[in-house]
Image (tube, rainbow, N blue to C red; front, side, top):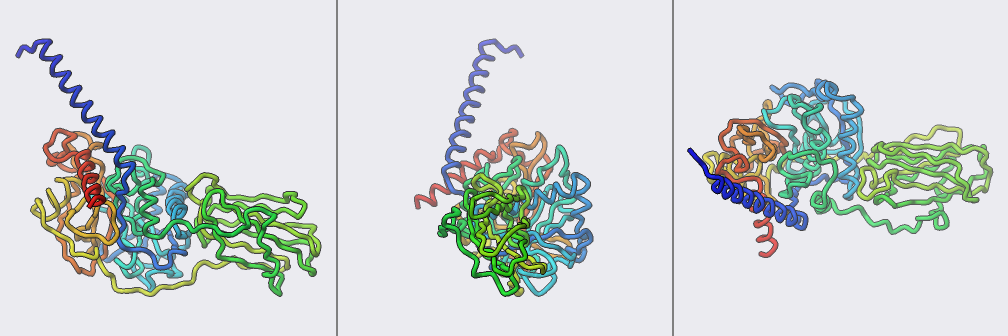
Length: 511
């Protein structure tokens, strides 16, 4: 059929105007998102937030009867060096610690079965949060067992990555996924802000927490405490000489750095029975994820030595001083190695030790607060609504919110502490265990034509079930049915979903 140039120009102008209008709407939405707080917390947090440990499950660790054992090392080592993927996990933990009143430290793992032992926190055999790998349903990047009191045994907080996912070049960014999953393990739900680490969809690389993420974790644990001490320079240093024991050793745990720029100075006088040599240690290993930095200098203000471990999230730095004499004054200068605000490793607890004797000094031990298992309290504080447009429940679609769109479940259910987007889970099965699942999929606007983000999970919900509750992080290529409006379907687009979420948040704020 013949089409005139005038018609073509008219159609072009109409298309261009529509694109411009859509671009304007998107910019307006993003501007609103930056000003709104749309994080979600799940009403769960660790009891001993001052000492949360995490560990790597050895390959072969039993996850559940009927499920393949963990294959974390085999999976990740096939894509990158062990030190690289472990550093991604450690940096993820350090990122959350840097902005909230909590400590996360790496510990060993003896490979005991998931959920074993008498303690939900403080088990000496493995971390409170254990990281493993197993085959997960197509489309999921990882899943996390939510923390106490939702789950009451030692499986609480455990993270499982999908061993069938490409974590190498051209695949999904491992640090982004671990940062998101570590947020779930600490009690964070999903955010409605697309740029947030805790956004419901994987939509690109995110290795830094946003203001919304920070507001959420601080709502759950509070911000880092204010440093009220006056020991921020050597002239006002805290004198710790009186703490030297009869064995000529000093051990001072429970110290705290509240972020980049916080500097602590301590003064010590060499005792009479010195042998001329002493060792000073700053320890964050087994205590927190702070990257340690320590300087030692004498009363003349001359530096003797500076030692630091930037990028080491939980370490120990030591200096040995020679030529010391009784009555000589020395100063210890401690701070985090990173020098930027909210940087991983910039806030958390530490301890210092000074040893004037010839005897070895044992490191400061980690927390020994062992918290016994408790009955799991299950899901949200209110029953989960299964009413909605979908045949299997949910809201406006096939068992999930916004048509075939990922993990946003019904808006009808309540959540203990939320200023954002409620995310009730659905009942799923992992091995022999029933779990509360919350599927996270790739942003539909990033999927190619013919690919949907529908995780295909049945939303059969049984409120009050003693099942574990998981938070899923996924990316599923599915059938072309249910494509987002970005790809020509009549179902709501991601932009429409974001607008709806913002409008709902504004209604809550105004109402």
